[in-house]
Image 1 (cartoon, rainbow, N blue to C red):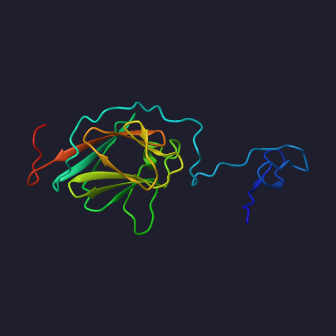
Image 2: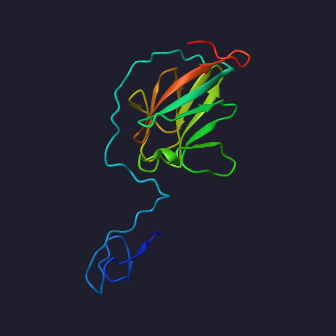
Image 3: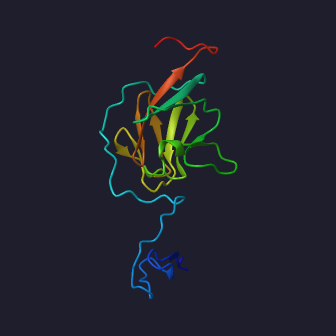
Length: 177
């Protein structure tokens, strides 16, 4: 069953049906309105530079994740006591870091884009079959496969760039780096 989109003619206000409909009143063919809730495929790939791992892959129990997003510089700290979805908005029974305030929709970030989680003494990222893909150090991740993350790795969701830092602490005290 095909979904039929209806919208109003921008010129005369007549109701139009279908993506490329021409208005029978004025013969104008306005573009369909944008839907903010649906992630659209981007017309360009992100500017990703393949890079070598710089830091350790060891992610101990007392280690948290600091995500720094660019170009804003906004940082989020995740304790990862349970898996966290990076995406837009919220969903019932899901732990989502909402990146909407960073222009996530404009950057092509899906509502449930990728998953960060702790597996043993490692941090793992999994793309959740996002529309515009997840990149780790410039490499496009295959959906639903696990990839180990190291301290200092670069993560790109659509075209939203982030650097991942491991924040180690002992008994709640942060050691000097």
